[in-house]
Length: 394
Image 1 (tube, rainbow, N blue to C red):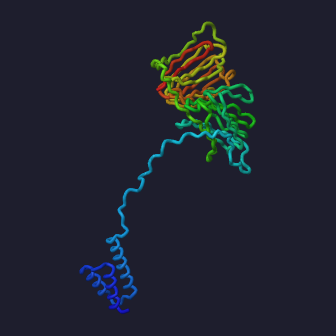
Image 2 (tube, helix red, strand yellow; image 1 turned 90 degrees about the vertical axis):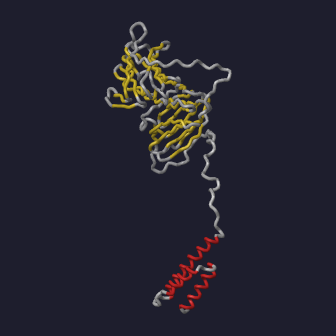
Image 3 (cartoon, helix red, strand yellow; image 1 turned 135 degrees about the vertical axis):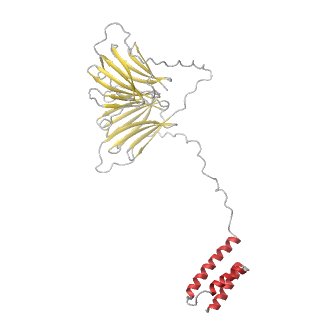
């Protein structure tokens, strides 16, 4: 095809696509093509023409716009918040891990942590393991909170109204775990977690529940852990016919060293038989049960911060909270008659933790971690004998 024929064909295509063109556009296109050197090949001319033709077609479609639509909001807009949380579903199953231990895996699962947390509609217990999860786990709900400790066979009662028993075989709770074995939470659902057995590869935990033993259980990996969620019941509301109680009295901090009000000579050694924390609204309470009498020398010291020095090791230790209280009881023994936890993490708003600092040569020291100022009131009670330390909340 000659150059003249190509120009005529191109003009006809322009006329068909764009309609009657403006005089300026036609003159510029023809001038540009006419002024091209004759040395340029027909391929170059065809390429330029194709580009111009494409631009004109796109422009014509944009002006005619047979498919263009206004862009409105995306149907439904942004995702709306989900409905209220799904109700807690109790699975109530005897739970057995589905994963089979791999060849050469460690035969014993070492418990390395026991963690509790309140999650709103449920409370959670997380049991973390080193060396993989146990191969055999059984969970059973029960009516009441009385369990049997093993191997002693002694009955044990936990806080709450009903209970859950967790039995884990080929498991160890003493090698990799150094925390509390009796955790009183103060939660609405899960009230207490207590070790019932840690003997010959069998670990049993008792859970005290405020309400029906409604739970679900599952395993998580990396790290390996067993999770037990317990339903948290609604807070109890007073009866419409009941009269509201009088407003509580303002808590008064005495922050004093206390002296025994008992008559006579105290015994050479007073055996501590119980450490019992409790929440009481405007204050949290620690009750120290004294088995055979009242000690003659008790001091209570306020500390800034929560660092204490263990005795006789001299090692530093830190408890939960912002400030501390050190209770020193001379002529006392915490190991003969007492078999409970010596590190109690409460979860209370005032008294955060109770930890044994010393139990050596007749001197017992307890470190109290307090969430706030170390404002306390201490006194003795009798029948049975006990030392009471109340800590202000807030």
